Image (cartoon, rainbow, N blue to C red; front, side, top):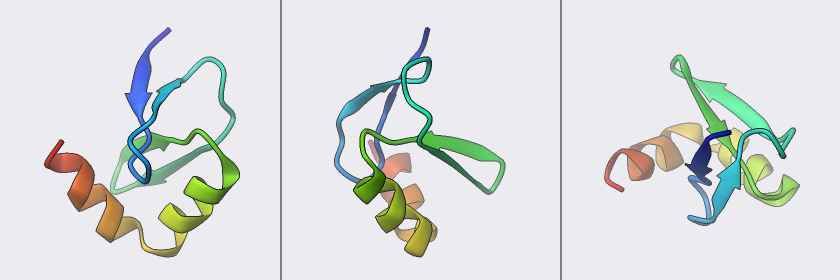
Length: 54
């Protein structure tokens, strides 16, 4: 089990409990809800760059 931060809302997400994930530039991102995944998929470069700063 590993915990990741949802790049859209900042919520902690267990990678074993979610099926919501996307890959962008060889990095997998995990999401707490479909809405966050949808926002990420529309503009992944925006959220991936924010994630790097966290």
